[in-house]
Length: 171
Image 1 (cartoon, rainbow, N blue to C red):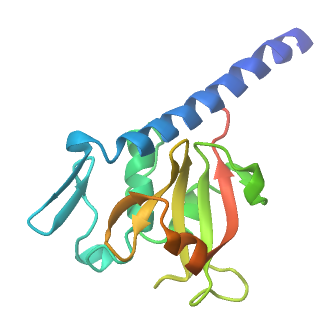
Image 2 (cartoon, rainbow, N blue to C red; image 1 turned 90 degrees about the horizontal axis):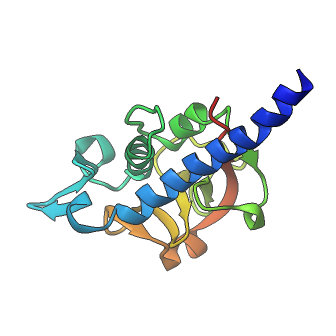
């Protein structure tokens, strides 16, 4: 049995790296060509509208953008509204508590400096923000432009790191 366990460890690690790589790629590819369409006041990411009434016209679309991108990468996750919903869906993923330990493919949660709850709870209406760490930077929905983007000075000025989640080894 020990030999089997030793043989499975690298496979599990490789599977986790493959999933992280798929998430990284889906985030990087999101803004290319036909993956992001902005037309007639609609923002479509991988064919899913992210700025509809359900997200207050994109103002609170960060969780939806992340769940659409995760789904595109092969993660079994429904379209999710609300950062707390993303946290619940990823609760079995590795919990990362230090921003300097982030890697491409991680899902990052920030707390709003202005609206955030003192206990860090994500309760909606902009208390938290979620994005994906990629080789190109942080991929997230910009609450000002109401569409997906990379980085942005608003992240550093308006949010502080709360936690991140790393994809598990696929069994």
